[in-house]
Image (cartoon, rainbow, N blue to C red):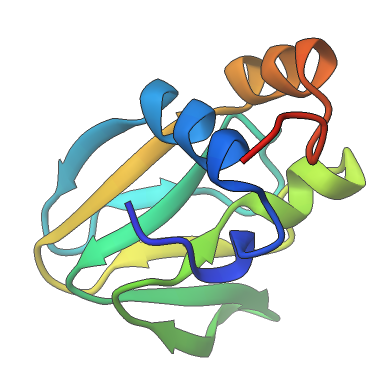
Length: 117
C-alpha cells in the first residue's frame, strides 16, 4: 500500500490502516466512485490509471488522470459529503480499498498520531 497523501500518519497508524485494506482489481471503464454517492471506500491506486470526471451539462468532463500512488475518495470522507466526481478505471487497475466504516472505527479507537511509532 502506497503512503502517498497519508504521510502524516505514524508507522503504527499506517500499519493499522494497511491491515484493514483489501486488494481489488477493476477493469477498463468500471466505475470506482460515482459522483453524488455517499463515501463508502477510500482507494489507494497500486497500478494503472483512473480518470476523475464530472458532469458537464449533457456530457462528462475529465478533470484529471491519476496514476500509481494516488489516493481518491478521501475528500468525501474528510468532508462527510457526497462524492464530488466520478472515478473511472482507464484500463485495468489494482487498488487497495479501505472501507470508510472501518476507517472511522479505527480513528475512533486510535486517533491518528496517538500510537507510538
